[in-house]
Length: 231
Image 1 (spheres, rainbow, N blue to C red):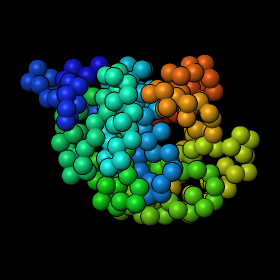
Image 2: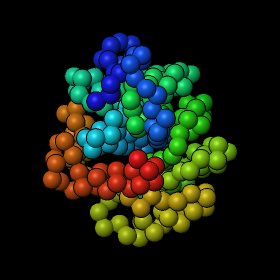
Image 3: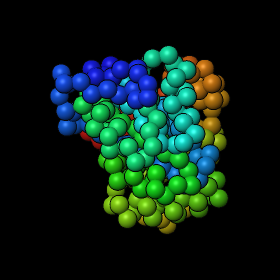
């Protein structure tokens, strides 16, 4: 739990004098200019898995639709903390999360908004670009790739909703992504019913089906992220 988090409205991150600044906090931005790429699903699963592993985590929802914040409300106070903010208040949210003892912040962003994406990318230690493995989806990452390149931030394309036994599709994805100067993350999420069922229930796949394949994929993803971010 965060030592300085209160479930108050409008902001669920409260700064209190007793807390020290967490200088080792890491920030992940989940960015894609394409709708339906799975940004919110990815953000919720990363932060919840990190929290379950003992890493105090916060999700900052910059999407005006506030899907992540709505999911957080359905959990009735269960960690991780999810707070909806306008992108102009992102720096304040990060400061409050750090003062509250967070070790990881995951920023969920809106599609079709350069200003939101740029703010998140600039604030991030690592950028993840979720993308479905279809060629049309892969070609659509060019705008996001340009934003990442101009900010000189480390970024990976993380394949989402990958069909089973899609070996050739993965090879095609790696080739398509390389054209944008990006790498495909060595972990990804397959197309599994557990992800959808879990979110509907206000959970994540590891909470909904702890011994399932989806939970295993989320665990592998978290291990990789912790190694990359050294947390």
